[in-house]
Length: 285
Ligand code: ADP
Ligand code: MG
Image (cartoon, rainbow, N blue to C red; front, side, top):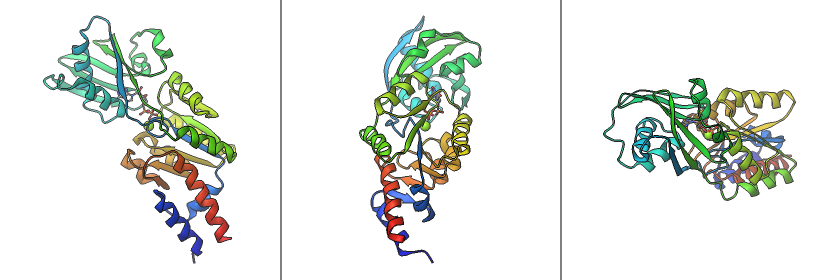
């Protein structure tokens, strides 16, 4: 039979907006020595805003409409920002053959023109040259090509969550190492990690590369909690000893796969979950 303490622990967690999907995870969290986190939607709000539009030959409004017509086919937080910025300007444009390439962006035909919108990796994949300085920008960038030629870019920014810095400090106070894994570019990842005091941060990662990083840590004998929100995060959430999903903005697949769900998306709840596990074990034993 399950000791009373486990029910108490699950109840206490639930009153704090933390859903444990099984009492065994109250034990698992007490052994966590490394917390691996996604950036967008986990440590940052995941709500981007267009800061700046830069074009070569295009009229800026026409450029934004062209990109938004494509991004309107995606549910990615970056896509939502571009669409919101464009207003109604793109709604009459003809769009076809749209495909989303995980960790890269979108390709499609808008008004008969081949359009790519995504990161520099997407353009590199298609052998399209782009300004080298774009890789240094410390905000997220949507790079765009029209008919196989760089046409401009949008600089978009996200905000760090209010309690993220404190959450990282609390992990370090418990001797838990912190790692950030992101599909966003390295310059953004380095900047966010610096602000938050995260031990190790890796950017430009494809979903399968996030899995490799977590597997490598497990192979070293680390006890891993992985915290993510995106649809791409489901495989790493499944691999971690404790897979944690941000439940508010999180994708259904990630919430489904997770062992623990944080309902209000606050990073401080990661440490609360670990502390509740420790408290419960104390009561059980
Ligand atoms: P994360 O690890 O931050 O959740 P993703 O794997 O979802 O990132 O995406 C990685 C990168 O791919 C993004 O930072 C962005 O540069 C690019 N990208 C993905 N989807 C889109 C999109 N719809 N529009 C533009 N860029 C995109
Ligand atoms: Mg994500």
